Image (tube, rainbow, N blue to C red; front, side, top):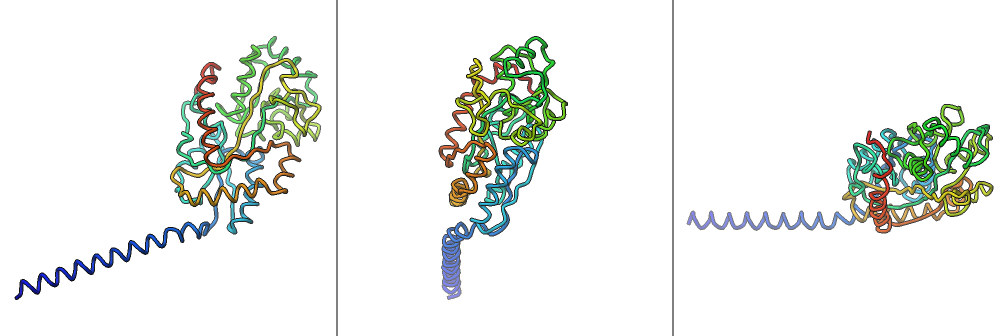
Length: 332
């Protein structure tokens, strides 16, 4: 009798546990979609891996303001410069994959695999929205003695290492842009790294270096202010904001090179969160205010979603693997 009661009690206990487990399971299943639907519930941070004032920073801040209005929660941009973007790249990849820490990456991140001693694999990030493409430009101080790109390159060729070119960090996109230009034209530049395109441009205006290879949009304010002068642009056609500036190809130099910028999150960010962010980012990019901002500042307008962005990154990796090692970049 005692054994029977004990068995009955044990059976009842097991049934109770099973019912509780089943109930908890249903709660989790029911709660998962609700959690995704509730996102975001707090402030979102976007890490920019370069100093304030550069193209990546300016575009990110404008886009963040529009996304904030759409998502109903603060979207804050934080600058984490250093190592040609590596400091910020690592922080983005290491963040919790919950959608509350995002970042901006560029093809600089992919380049660092071949041009620097340390790099952050782009596969550790989840692409959300590629939102910009800009070509490199060759810019000098407004009162520099060279009237055109040919004169500047002739001087640099006759004086190896004397022309100092500012970039946005060792192994970063604008460093490679100038190195590739030097390789194509037989010119030896002295490369000077800065924390971003803005400080690099200011250095040229201040006479600390002779030139920079950042995008035309990033030097636009100083050009319009009479401090800098763009000699040539590495695009297939002239830039609308600077119609009087020739392309390298028009100047007889086969050189086209540029940067793209993409909003990303850490790898393993939930698909429903990525989807919600992509919808918001696309709204921002298509907003007339954003388009007007990009046009007025000379930033190129391009949009790719998560899958297309990942495909472009994979292709760039293959392309850079072919061209970058041959440039003789020293790993730092």
